[in-house]
Amino acid sequence: MRIAIVGGSFDPIHNGHIQMANQSLQALQVDEVWFMPTSSTPLKNRELTLDQERLAMIDLVVQKDSRFKVCTLELERAGKSYTYDTLKKLIETYPEHEFYWIIGNDQLEQFDKWYHAEKLVKMAHFVCFDRNGKLADSKYDIMCMTMPSVPVSSSEIRMGNKLNYLPKEVLRYIYRNRLYVKDFVASRLTEKRYKHSLSVAKLCEEFALNNGYDMHIAYYIGLFHDIAKYMPKDEMVKWMNSICPENMEYPVAVWHGFVGAAVTKDIFLIDDPIVYNAIYHHVLGTSQDPYAMMVFCADKLDPLRGYDSSKLIEICNKDIKEGFDLVVQQNREYLKRG
Image (cartoon, rainbow, N blue to C red; front, side):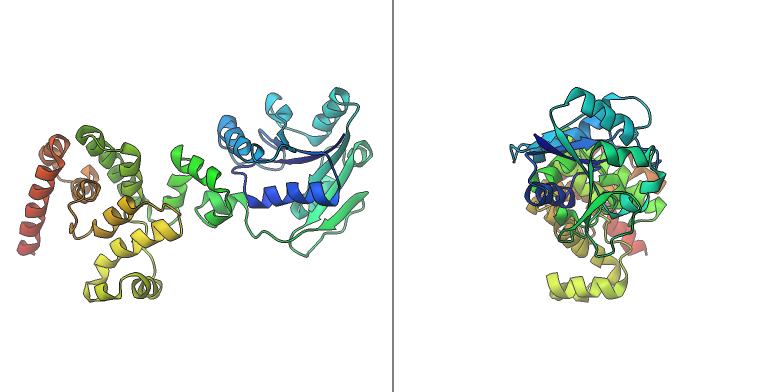
């Protein structure tokens, strides 16, 4: 059989990888495409997400096309992974197969740094798919083909950008297993505000557990509640005009609740009305939905705020409605004092 190998960290796998696999099937007329995740590579030093998590996300993609397979050869080998060693092992294990090794522009540009580059091109067909119209020159025998651009990278996704380029089942897996999500938030907040958000998320989980609600939903409400806190005002005005122009009369300091709800839904693709409502109302405390009460209380009672909130936290853990009423009353008294 003719086998195309699409390698990479797949941290996470996204539509760009899938398009490369489909292009291999169509343009090269291969029989199968094998996704080969790496454990670590000589040219990258970043710590990768756990192997089993990356494999699970790849499996979700592979299940949708019988011509897609997963090859774990590089994961099974400890230490740095060299393509030369991998390809040598593949040829020894599957002498009946003809291999096509798929690379991208960035890899083509660095190909002369690859271990035994001159031997590699004699062991298999190397094919570079051009995705950006800037195909690099190479002195090696590498077939170059064009494919429609998919303007996304795994690094962008890890920062919470372009999540719409993820297969829906992969995005669900990411949120279900809390992969990358802290980085989504950290990249948009100050260090102090990020720590506050983590603390609020933890407290929301605690309230949910003790009041019989979904800890997972509560966690994400707490984590994302301040996501729009540092959005530039001109950008925030655009969001406000789009989602709730009637609320423009509120002070700007309140807007991040309204905008944060929309950002969580539209940018981070958490399309849950419970999450939306809770974040939307978390600043003013104007919703008595249980999750909205949880995040309002957790935000005000966050231990990192520097005062003893333990008694009110204890009450919230016993009865979130009772705790919410007390926190609202305390907040009103605080505002009256100025």
